[in-house]
Image 1 (cartoon, rainbow, N blue to C red):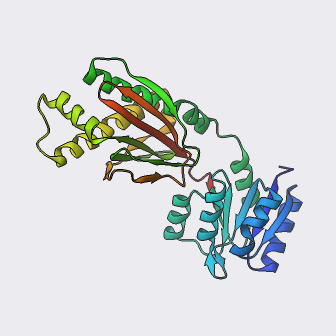
Image 2 (cartoon, helix red, strand yellow):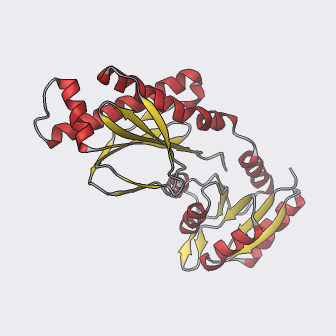
Image 3 (cartoon, one colour):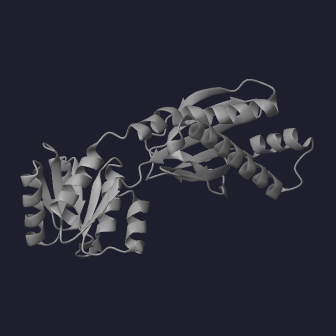
Length: 287
């Protein structure tokens, strides 16, 4: 290993020295250090590291809050938690945030170097998911809508570079879990949902609960079929879905700060349906 640029976040100067000398000996370049959340972003932006080592105990905050701040600024940041604290609860929170690795103090140089190597190695399986995922979810949506409308479905890209969009009225969010976690977002108007109910049941909906129930089931089916198609492509994905969450509020702002969502609009005989899908890497190596 050589040439990787590392930023060290730790409130202890001695700990930063130990980690820094370990990394330099392994061929890394320590390009920046921070000891508080106040200097965190400024240092990160200035030194542009490949990897950030993060202590858990930071004055006035903690390593989790610092990691969230970094991920809000750059969701592709690679963070390795380096802390004397290590238990199931802290590991679970680190994984949820998207921290790439976790090594316990006192730092084992070989373990830390191994984690950095794994973090920086290309993840070809995740790249396949990134390359194929949105297309597969579009195909699943199109299959189901075509059965309902008896007409072809056309897709147009949705510009959600700011990771925020305005709901049309009803939003379904389906969590995806497996080797990689992610979310599918399906958003449509109440009128579009009503037309879907009419097509499926050959009658108008009885009440709003029936409409929301239809949206939840449709989202669950679309996500489930898409995950099955991806798993058939590569069993290593191991994807499955969690029960959908339904939000009903016109003009609500939908955000996804922890995921890069790839979105599109499906034009059908019922109306416009927004489809968004995003995945994130889980842990790479935990010691």
